[in-house]
Structures are given as structure tokens and as C-alpha cells.
Image (cartoon, rainbow, N blue to C red; front, side, top):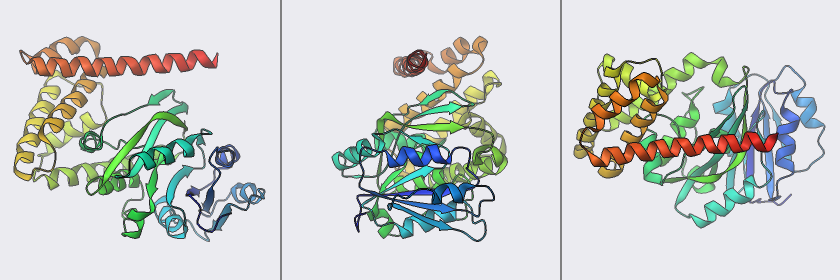
Amino acid sequence: MAENPLISVVMSVYNDEAFLAEAINSILIQSEQDFEFIIIDDASTDRSVDIIKGYRDTRIRLYVNSKNEGLTRNLNKGIRLSKGKFIARMDGDDISRPDRFKKQVEYMRKHQNVMLSSCWTHAFGESNSILDIKGTSEQLRVMMLLRPVLMHPGFMMRREIIEEGMFYDETFRTTQDYAFQVQVSEKYDVGMVNRILLNYRVHKKQVSNAHNTEQSHNADRVRTGLLERLGLHLMPAEEAIYCAWAFEKRDVCRSDFNEARRIIKMILNANRESEIYKERILNDELYKLLFQWIVKSRAGRKAYCVGSICRFNMKKWLLFLQTVLQLFKRQIRKYVMIQNKK
């Protein structure tokens, strides 16, 4: 292994024996082979450590915690141990596609201003969907007002931001990826590789399911912080609508969408004072996110809600049509993927 590899892969493992070998193998067969593989076992009680020790690849560096430290601390530990020019994330239950590192490094080299990127993913297991958000750095930053947009297991970052002391916030035991991508995006460009390079496994044992309440609370912390940075403080009823919008809850009332539109106006007004976001992009992306929520909600309310929001505004109608087209393309991609597997 090179003393200073191109990529440092950081993986935190906790009782992942069922999927671990498949995850490790997907890294070892990457078309880009210049990497070190830092694996931190978080005091697993299953066969995870034995499985890792069974590999004889010198690029693997295993560290075993004497007690459970949690994902956030393990990631910071792995990053501090890393030597690569780029630092890539990986989870013990996911599968990186063979060209993932090659394509992500190509993207980072082409976009020198991007300090953190991720990639499109295919969610499989107890779900079957394509996670294919696209946009410029500024568009992605606006989307973060509602939810994380860069898939955590697909992260690739430049060493420079680590050397500047930008680590995961250890007050977040969950949703640390949301806080981190927001932190980076406030200072640097972020990006997305518009190719499916990661298979993201959805199952009941993963952290997002096991700590659902805590994860929701932490996501609210990030969203609230972003709004407060704009100088905006929502009332409890407004926060409830904003949260419902962020999670795209489907059993909602017509008035909820109009309330969300009112919140958009509040955000736009607050931004005119702070000038944190470019106004046109902020307006367009927030309305597209609102239309996306409407389209995914109960069918009987769609026409009324879209009409009441767009009215005689041609630009809003165009944004609505653009949103519908994007969602339609996602369904086509999903259908093609399913057919190719048959």
C-alpha cells in the first residue's frame, strides 16, 4: 500500500456480520485500487471482527473499540487516521459499485471547487427506489433547508477541509451527515455525481430505523439552525408544517400546502435581509420542493392545491411541470432497473 494513497475509505462497523463481507468485497474490487481501507469496529458482539480479520489485504487497517463509541466518533477517529488525498465513506451493510471511486475521483478532479460530493444510489432490500437528486452547489444548498441531499455512504471529501478542522459534530449521534454537509456547504461548494454508484441497503437493523425519534429530533435541530441563520424563527404550528413538508407526509390537508407557501414567503423575505442564498434559486427550488410534496400526497387534492398556489403565475406553472417531469423520469429509471433484473 502506498504511504499516501489516493483515497482513504472510512467504515464504522457494529454487528454487521450478515452483510459485512459483501460490503468489504465491493471495496476491494474497485476499478480504482489506490486506497487504504480504515475499518473501525465499534465493540461488536457478533462475528464482525472475525470476518474482517479473515481478509489478508494489506490495505485494510482494522481498529477495534473496547467499548461502543457511536458512529460519529468513529468517523472522526477514522478521518484522523486517514492519509489519502480524498476521504470516502462506506457502511458495513451497503455495496459500492465497481466504478464508484473512479467516477467520484474523476468528478472531484473536474470540479476543483467542490469539497464534498456524493452520488446517486439505488435503495434496495425493504425498499426499491432511486435516490437521484441533481443540482448545482447552490441548488443543493437550498434543498438542505428541508432535508439532507447528499447520501452519507456515498460521501467523498477533500483532505483540505479536514486539515482546516472540519469534522463531524459529535453532539449528533445520528443525522451527523446532515449537520456535516450543511457545515461544509456554508463555506464551500458541494456536488453530486449523476450516476448510480452505490447500492444502499434498507433493513430494520440500520441506525435510521433503530433511532428514528432521535434522528427526527436531530434533523429538526439542523433545519432550525438553518432558519435561525436567516434570522427566521417559526412558531410551533409553523414548525409542524415545515416538518411535515420535510418528511413529505402524505396525509395532510389542503391548508397545509398553503401554509407551506406562506413559509416560503417568510424565508424569501428573511433572505432579502441576510442575502445568504441567491433569491431566484431559493424561490425556484423551494417551490419545486413544495410541488413535489403536493404530487406525492393524496390524489384527490392535487389539482386544487396546485391551482391555488400557481394561480395565474406562468413561472410557477412551469416549475410545477418541471417537477412532475423529474418525478416521472425517476419512475422510468426505477421501471427500467426492475426490468433489467428480470
